[in-house]
Image (cartoon, rainbow over all chains, first blue to last red; front, top):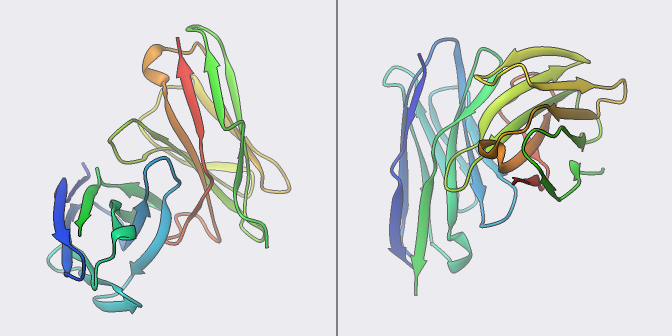
Amino acid sequence: GQSLEQPSEVTAVEGAIVQINCTYQTSGFYGLSWYQQHDGGAPTFLSYNALDGLEETGRFSSFLSRSDSYGYLLLQELQMKDSASYFCAVGSDYKLSFGAGTTVTVRA
Amino acid sequence: ETGVTQSPTHLIKTRGQQVTLRCSSQSGHNTVSWYQQALGQGPQFIFQYYREEENGRGNFPPRFSGLQFPNYSSELNVNALELDDSALYLCASSLEDGGLEAFFGQGTRLTVV
């Protein structure tokens, strides 16, 4: 079967750094993606890793370790607008499957 | 470059009815995937169309069906609606099947009463 695990909630203050971990178990794996979704909005693409290592895109970075079936999304210099749900999604068998999401709350 | 658009944005249907949701993919994208998102949960993969053929399906019954047209737009049809079908239905397009970078539409909020 397939499984994806990520924390359900994270709270942090403005300016802080947050790391959202994602562990997965699946066959036919070819990459890990991250998406942000604000309340009532559509998921928007943030980053993906097809190979091991770190990908940096502005304040957001994503990491993948294929041998550990593990990845994370790093949010730096948190801003109030970063309050949203964040989903990891595994690419396997030529489709994307999403985790349950992590709600990030940024406090002033 | 136009983004992914879905219609309608909201819909209320009665249990047992049928519904058709529509999606226009982003320009240049040949793959469309459909997801169901219940409140507080992640998007659940329904199925994917690549070049007009269904090439992947999640754990959804056959009353969920779809089509992709030559211009790569797509429809999701749900027959015999049940109360549990109430959810946000999202369409996503990508450059290739199973693409890690998917672009989502705003979704259709379906309520079944």
